[in-house]
Image (tube, rainbow, N blue to C red):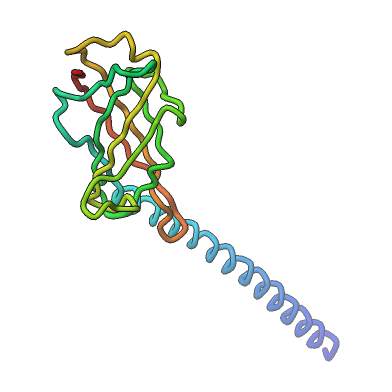
Length: 168
């Protein structure tokens, strides 16, 4: 009977050790899963807090025909709650992706801002020889997407699509 009791205690202690190890693994995995879910929720929240929009008269967007490559100038307002990164911008004109070398930006305001914070206006000038065929009163589509600055280690993006009429 003494042997039976000792082996029962050994089995009980072994079972407790195994179950506590399994519990520790499950708790660690739950913690990791919880952190991933929190990060995804923060990402979703951030995507709701970043926004940009076309600013200006969509029926009178300037086209400058003085250079070899004609230039189209338009304005974007940061309407979100966080700074945007103007260097992380993609512009499409009538579905044509304008290379980064053909996109120049400058901040407007007094004093001139240095960061694209909320409610700051950005002037965007795009140039491409494809624009040389555009005449006055031509309707074109402008699509812009911009990444936000990193907020708590997360970045999101915002975009807009606007039909405009160009005039020079």
